[in-house]
Length: 257
Image 1: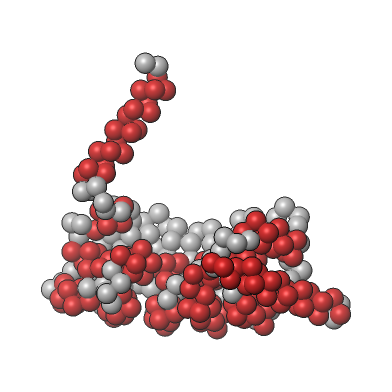
Image 2: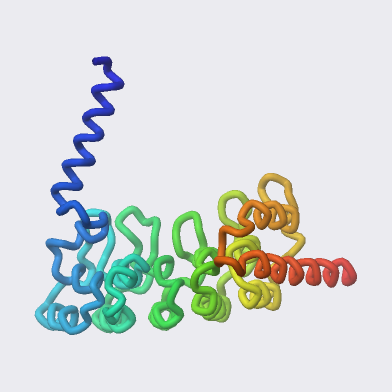
């Protein structure tokens, strides 16, 4: 057995060992909160237990081994999906009231709670009211762009989160690596209401991607790649409606030059 084969076997054994240690069906986030009652309550959306723990003196800034706090776990979509009966919004509000920092980043400094919260405007509103930076979501992705990627499955809520972020000062033309903006993401992954909100808020249709493509060129290519794979059978029409909004905005911008 050569060195590469041995390394591969060691890796497989480590993965299987971790899987067995976590019970075989836990996610990484679930296993990280198993021994931390406050974080576990936040993950489950158990607001009564969370309030009891806070009243008993639980450390609201405690982190798990991945560097996430109870607030990070309360806002995470994975937590909401695993515990749909939980009251995660109330957990967010209780944690903030107890002194959790709305802009508390993970231990490595790369992620703020706002990044995980953009799927739910009530969470976004609570975080912004407590002083969260409307721009920062993750180190390489502004919160507004993160919301755009939720457009395929939960466009109404994500659009409302965008509205709140823009009102709080988020830069509508901020770009992440590759030159992708909220508008470029929304045109492919979002719905017409989301695209219209961004255009009405000053999103630039003459933006160029990092590879030199215009925003319209990139969107046309990306829509073609995703045709029929997003938003169920309605994806084709949604893409067409989004494209029409972009074309109209581009034509208007050309006339005003």
